[in-house]
Image (tube, rainbow, N blue to C red; front, side):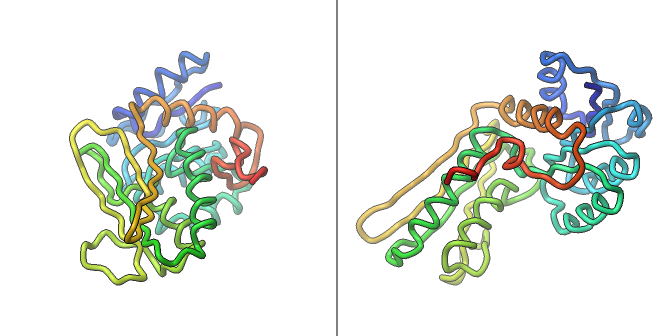
Amino acid sequence: MKIALLGYGKMGKVIERIALERGHEIVLRKGSADSFEGLLNADVAIDFSVPNAAVGHISECLNSNVPIVSGTTGWLHDYDKMVDLCNEKNGAFIYGSNFSLGVNLFFELNDYLSKMMAKFKEYTISMEEIHHTQKLDAPSGTAISLAKDIIKNAEYSNWTIGQEHNENELFIDAKRIENVPGTHSVFYTSKVDTIEIKHTAHNRDGFALGSVIAAEWILGKNGVFTMKDVLELGKTI
């Protein structure tokens, strides 16, 4: 499989290593100032760039009939536009706030637990996410995905990172600490106890491997997909 890497920072280099280990070829390594030359030679593109570049990367791929897997967060105000473009071009597109297998299992656990806890009004829900200091968006895309499932199942109207918040707002404590790949925790707190679920990433390899697996999976397909489709999650719960 021939891969175009859109974004060639730390994550891009880890993706490159894992893709080569799995027998694939890199035909484009695009940094912030590089052109798209070589994109048309790619079977699939993987985008781990920055928020203000993601829409341009995804659009270029869909307009060029190149399937695109994007793990860049912080641009989702334009997500519906990319879905419309994908459908218009009969393309193939996967966006994931996190491509780690463990995190996607954690998504399922979070969704299930929030449904189960919905009737126990004595518990207040809050979240914490910790990432490295180079991460540009806060809260993380992963935290937002977790929050959306909680809001869907519980009596919260929206999420917030503000310390001063209303009781109907789900508080996310977003912290930035040097050399932390990603830690996400969800707390259910009452006067007598706390229930906590937590996912801790030890390095970037899990994110990179998941994105390569998604790129392998999307070949030959048309439509808009998620990692639930790739990993066939949510079918047995």
